[in-house]
Amino acid sequence: MSLNLLSVVELLAAYRSGELSPVEVVGALLAHAQRWEPRLHALCALQADAALAAARDSEARWRAGTARPLEGVPVTLKENIAVPGAAMRLGTAATPPDAVADFEAPPAARLREAGAIAWARTTMPDYGMLSSGLSSLYPEPARNPWQLDLTPGGSSAGAAAAAAGGYGPLHLGTDIGGSIRLPAGWCGLVGLKPSHGRVPIKPGYAGRAAGPITRSVADAALMLAALARPDARDPTQLPPQDLALEAQSLQALPLRGLRLGLLLDAGWGEPVQPAVAALVTAAARAFEAQGAHVEPLAPFCTREMADGLDRFWRMRSGLDLAALPAQARERVLPYIRDWVAPAAAYDGATVFRGYSQMQALREASNAACEPFDFVLSPVAPMPAFAAHRASPLHDPARPFEHIAFTLPFNMGEQPALSVNAGWTPEGLPVGLQISGRRFDDLGVLRLAAAWEQLRAAPRPWPLDAA
Image 1 (cartoon, rainbow, N blue to C red):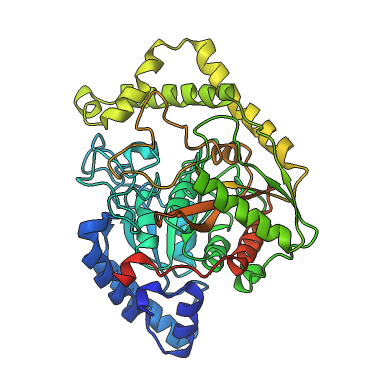
Image 2: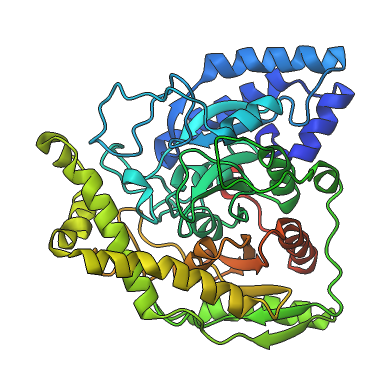
């Protein structure tokens, strides 16, 4: 297998035995990325010299017996993850070219402390507000490695493109309405939105989380163990939970007796396409054949909840854009400007009612899922769409019709994971979402590991076979 496709477990074993060096792996990874970037557009910054220097330091630690948990393992960071001195333009040309971060975000710090090598930063759409890689900053949007004229999804667009494209095993994304799980689902990956507060983050926001995008559940678990260490800068952080031991020997969850909800109608948004519904249903039946009890879950979210939150987010983003100088505001992606424009006419009552829908979603999501150990659903109603579209409908008046299955678990603060359910007849990946009760991140990972054992053998990763 190519060095760039080795898992974390494989890399650590090879480093430990001396069969491989982090310098070799980082060198191979840089060569692979440089070969494919002209077509994939996953990266906004490549830190080759710094990565090779860090790899030499990691090699020395392995020789000295002082290796850390992720020593020498390559990782990419989404562009909105702050690292001191690194450009931080948030995917938009409205941000000055010299804008850099002046602090280290908790997820970046935890990965660095664990020995991971942050060798590149990945692209995102303007302000992370789209479910594609379309951006006013980058000449071309990120592409889906399974079919290069399609989007990988977003807003962790470059992270998912990099993961499916073989740019190493670990990729850090962020998620406020589906921005980890949507691209993971559309690229055949594992993407975990942890319980709110499990991974400390700065800046924080209601529903915002950082988490792994990887090619396997085991790698996601190992990455989460490093990320889920405390940081007092996030006042919503959960009490520390040592996940390291469980992550190192992640066991598939026994299925007999589990009570699983099956949600195929989100209550609003685009209807689930038949090919997507068939794959998610087949996964539920596979769990059922192993002794799990699968029950239909009725829709628990409403159009009022979705539209209210949409209005609140329009006002929030509208205020951000209004604070920009006029010339900078004109550089924002036109789709984003069109989306926020109606907010100028909102009164205070409209915005407050919209804000209140976050709590309504939180209560509805937790109440509906409480009777079940886990809930199964599609990640998105459809497979990946054209790369130059902002969303499946590409309509700023209806921007969120594809996030009806992912959004509730951000507001509900529950862990939710995307794992590949299979492929459409056209060969496009479809994501199975597994959500759990609040704080049960490990359970969600273990059920996903069980699915990895049940499903058909995965297809070869696309760029490695090209």
